[in-house]
Image 1 (cartoon, helix red, strand yellow):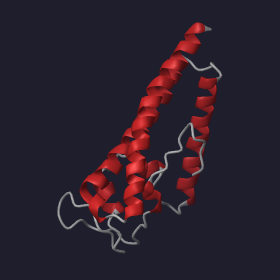
Image 2 (cartoon, one colour):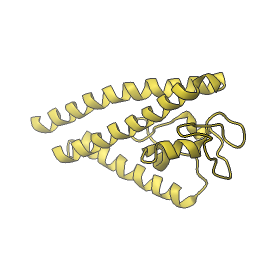
Image 3 (tube, rainbow, N blue to C red):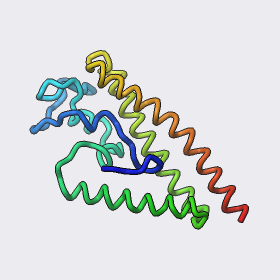
Image 4 (cartoon, rainbow, N blue to C red):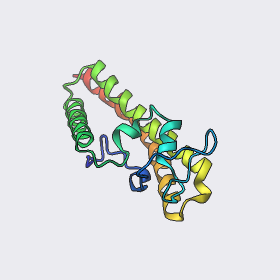
Length: 160
């Protein structure tokens, strides 16, 4: 999914993680991997651990055109909402809803990346570990920026 840097674009290193063709079952409760192809991160086990995480809806690798269409439609909706916010046309409720969802997405991506690093960071190739660490740092920073952006948007509409 391509997205502008200001909205949904939530790149995560998991987009590059190979998915297994058959679901892998963790050997014990709470174990994440490895996948059937030997990669340290098992997406199926992660999904079982974090079933409601927005990563599965928004960023997990897929070749399903229906999923791609849903992601594209969501990105377009989010871009329109952001446009209304930046143009000072959104209501306070719309502003709160938009940034509430942005926060939830970043928290979910952060949760997933922190879990992988905590439980499998030492097994990851150095490049992938670095990408997960970058994802953690970017989403922490994004959460702080979201608070500032929401506050600024509310100040702008109250000033008009």
